[in-house]
Image (cartoon, rainbow over all chains, first blue to last red; front, side, top):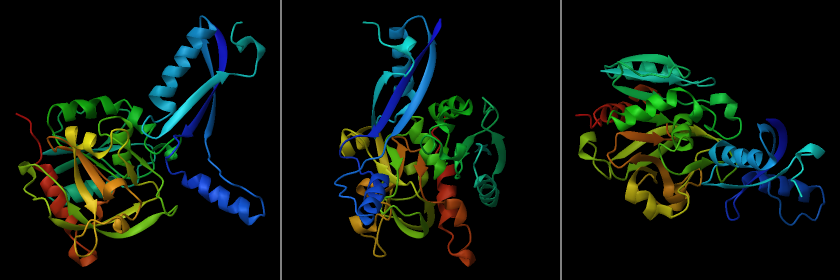
Length: 90
Length: 228
């Protein structure tokens, strides 16, 4: 098993009220920025031990569904982490 | 009757809950969340607080505690389970109760007495629909979201037990202090013995200190078991 790194982005689903985003948006406007819409999410970096990139990704997907995101409110995307060894095989 | 009050790292209403339960005449013990068994207990309370500092999402990490399997088993056995505030968030995060709790729509932490109306409870509780209760809330993340399928899906498998209402008992959107869907303050499983609510019954134990409706609520909940 080798380490594979992934980045999970968790965002509130479209239509779910994002009060944190609203607060940030209000302050951005207060500072004179033409902010039209702001939504705040979460970036989670995970290094997982797996036999392959695909197996690692599947495991991270499992983590995202089971804990990192709440399916009632949130959605997530998974991408490869920064190090070259973690690149999706071409 | 012997009740377990589960202590998570960051629980802060555990001793209040224990004292309140003793007030209504039952034996109550604090049990650490790392324990994986509730052998010898007849009911469990998940108290309020900020388990794991609300990291990731309120209740998300506590919901994965070893104790939660025992809580799940207690619920399945028909014994009373009650989640108060953060305990309600933990029950939702664990999937034991449906829906999710998120930031108050007002972006403010709300702390104060609220008027509540019992929406629906089984006969075991001895508390009719329409009963009015006055209980305090203290939360920043208490807006209840029913999730996909909406209210009708919720009501098929579960029941809405408490709703925020006005001083006259009217359940209108402006009385949902935190912006909850349908003014929901508490939900239960269909049989009514697994309940979660944002208000704090353990803080309403004495009319001399603001109100005694918490005592009524706790007594009724203790009778909600459906164990054979």
